[in-house]
Length: 145
Image (cartoon, rainbow, N blue to C red; front, side):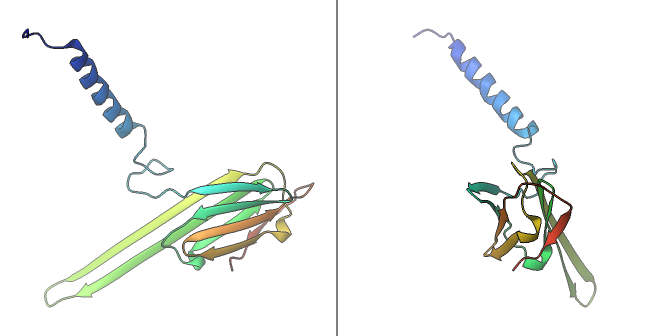
């Protein structure tokens, strides 16, 4: 064998470095707003003839911490929570706070009957049923059961 280095090894190494830099700078490890450590809400939108059904993953949130709003042809989901604990010891007080937010807005393919929209929340999964309609008007907040 010769002592020459295979030129394809250099290309593979260059490709691997490029891939790592792309992943670090493209936001693949970041949330929707580009902030590291955040959570991204996954959403499925299904068309079921006379209605749309949106399923959103919001694990760890309580029903009261989630807000759903439909306006014209846009559905907005917001989940906000803040946790704080205080632990007192003989010489110090330790206070820890944590907040988490998730927000998604999706444009619906056609107008929905806003007064008939319903939402349920079970085991970290939010399901929103949006009956279709011909014309859109105003907006309203949807109560989650």
